[in-house]
Structures are given as C-alpha cells and as structure tokens.
Amino acid sequence: MAINIRSEEQIELMRKAGKVVSEAFQLLESEIRPGIGTNMLNEAAERFIKSSGAIPSFFGYRGFPSSICISVNEQVIHGIPGLRKLRNGDIVSIDIGVYLNGFHADAARTFAVGDISDEDKRLIEVTKQSFFEGIKFAKANNHLSDVSSSIQQYVESNGFSVVRDYVGHGIGRNLHEDPAIPNYETKSRGPKLMRGMVLAIEPMVNAGTYEISVLDDKWTVITGDGKKSAHYENTVVITDDEPELLTL
Image (cartoon, rainbow, N blue to C red; front, side, top):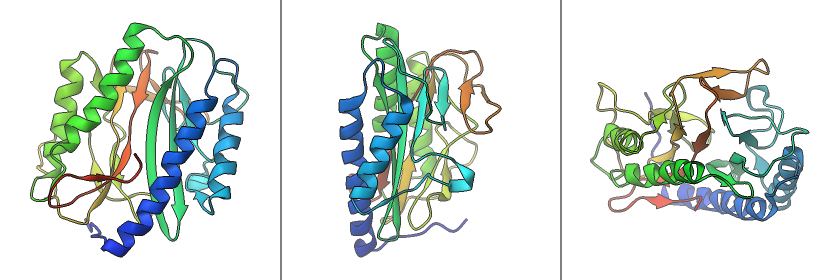
C-alpha cells in the first residue's frame, strides 16, 4: 500500500477543487424539488463545474456515463441520472467529484425532496453525524480503524447498518488512491494516519440490511431489502490537530 503524503502546495490546489464541489452542492440544493428530472440536476452540475474551469471527475471514469451520481431512495450509490423525476417524499443522494489543476476532490450529500418521513430525516441525519463521529479520530498518529469503528458504532447504535461492499478511499492526483477506508471495524488497525494524507471518508448507511446488489446497468447499487439508504462524504486532510474538510 502506497499512501501519498501531500505538500501544502498540493493541498492548496485540492482546496480549490473542493470549493467547486461545495458550490455545486449549494446550486443543486436550491434546485431539488418534486418534479425535477435527475438528468436536469446532472446537467446543472456539469455546466457549473465546467464554468468553474474544472472537469467532472466521474464522467467516463471506468465508463460511467454521467457527470455526477444521483441515487434515489433504495439506491445506495452510483445512480445514473436520467428521465426519472423526483417525487415528494423521496430522498436523493448526490455524489460529486471535481478535477482541477491536476487534483480531485469528492463529496456526497443526501437531500430531502419535499416533505419526508421522520424516519427518513433520522436516516439522513445519522448518516451525516456518523461522518463527524468518525473524523473525531482523523488525526495524525491515530489509526484508520479508529475512524472506521467509530462510524460503525454510531450508525448501529441508532438502529441502522453500514454498507460493507463499498468503502471510502484516498484521493489526490487520482480519484481513488490508497488507503481503502471501511466504515466498519476490521481485524486490522489499518495504517497510522499522518499529516498530509488526504482521504475521502464516506459512510453509506442503510435503513435495513447492509447487504446490497447491483442493477443490470452494472452501476446502480441498491439495498438488499428495498429500504432506503443515505450517503455523506467529504474530502479530509489529516493535520496535527483537527482535520480540514476541503468540500464543506
């Protein structure tokens, strides 16, 4: 495993990419409403990213056909935007990656569409908070497993489950780099965290079982029991003190 340590100059470039990601989410949040097509959200994000001088990281990545991932309700991740229109009561997870000045930034959020149930609100909030529970341990000299296990403990203490088949990742010149970042406890403590590591930490949380399957499009991941799922991610820099979030 070769984990890259980024210089301050490189991290500054990643900050700029992260700012585009953050601003793209602000734009989409203002557009999300019942009746809007997922393809319209994809087009709006693509226009904004390109107008910022950046490139959507996901378009063409391993053949992915869209600029962002849009996953609705029981879709966990990697949903392909299309003609589907969002409905009142849906929840929608959006994953955005941006490539700018030779570096990537990556983040995800889950949004309510119109009026959603209290349980769906809780799913979104627990998913988001599990990220922040995890990054309490994202400091130099801790181990990666400290982050992973705290995410799992928080999620499961709230009655939800963390996806096992997909994990977070290092990020930098490449969209996916070492290390892999599970959202659950493993037998290994994982690598020691060091100043200058940049990690995409991303809990994927299901209302029911953690088991998943992949649709025939070879991309869209859905929950094994058809219950809803939420996703929250930021690009995180390890420092000697509190971690820096480049996409918030």
